[in-house]
Image (cartoon, rainbow, N blue to C red):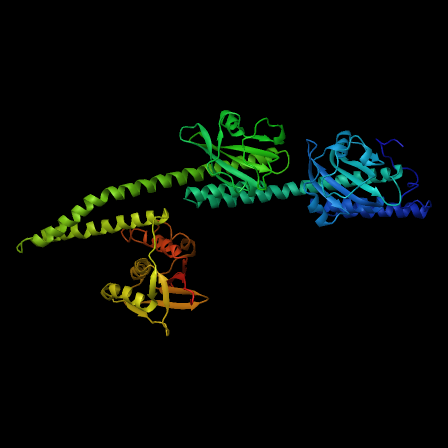
Length: 585
């Protein structure tokens, strides 16, 4: 029989499963088995399931101990590998799948069936990895469509014989041709589904990036998103330093946990440097061919098998790169490269926004510091002026002096809030916790605000817990949180309406709720009210600085707690914050 043209003979094979049935019934039985196997693989669209069915059927009908089905890319590298006859535990002990060398490499390159009596004596073998079960005889056939090899199918260790027969080679070749169609269909389905999922993921991840203002947080989000987008185990983000002399590692995921955070890439002899020079994306499908390696190892100290590097462009020039890594050598398709490039464009926009925001905050913080001294002088001068005014001064001039004093105090409070928020965000606020009695601490805070509520005719309600409840917290900061929430409630609650504080103790947590009777907060605005400077759409331009709620949330989180809001339009709002209670000891 010509091995290159596996034509269906007039009679079924004379050996193998149907060797004893050289009758018409035997032919029908053989064809029925082939038909069922073909139907089984063609009725599935999931690629992994298709490969498993192919491997299982090949092992059964060839009467072999083991079988395997692999997918081969255009470069002849195995990208998927499914086994049959080996337990999951055995498979995990073997480790990485074959890369396509040795006898499998011969099968893939020649594109013809391969039968070996004893693999251990074949000079073309590359050997088995540790923990691999011993195998002797081999029968392998290419899985090809129109002369293009898309995979390899092989069985090993013929049961009841020393080697596989020519008839079994014929059968497996025929089955592989049927399997090839199912494999290609499953690949097309997987590619279409993956393209849709990646487009949806790109949209979702872009929205996540646009909500980040802190650079460190954004760096990590970019890395996680890049790995998720291409379903790869690791990625790294590098940005050029200010002198544009090297790439500095800003964040990474999936790389060695002990990686030096100060790791950098030189511009010369690195893939990132070549991307900077050309302005184009570059991928390496097999890193073992690189003469000098400039990237960090994956977790477990293994070097990546392949990598893709795409540029980040800001102000029309490359400012950094995103690198994604594969554990195994692999090819990156044009679709994958375009997808990551599109994401890099969105990442650049998010970086622009976060960097501008950081510069803006640094400027405000510096300005606030610079204004404190002259503002203090204005306050003192205004106070002295008010106390020194002659009694017969016209009321208009007295009002002007009072206006200077009142607005300088307002400006001072704004500057203090801004500096306070900056210190909190930078982690420069240190708590001084002490043992507080909850009822006393709340009552003392409320007492200072009662004139505010009375001025507007608001009703205030607070009932202490029946039992004494102790709290471990910084008194000044605890009162600051409560004051911010109560002032916020006073601001939105109409005259004559109710403001109340509700308490709940459960599961070693204390929850305090400040409830107002205001207009409520729309759902789409609730996620933004803790943002710096955010005001509700109904707020007046001079209604506040927009810093009280973010300060309160950061102070609560500094105590190990949480702050959130529950609200609905026309039903008021309740701001809750919960704090951990001290242990009984």
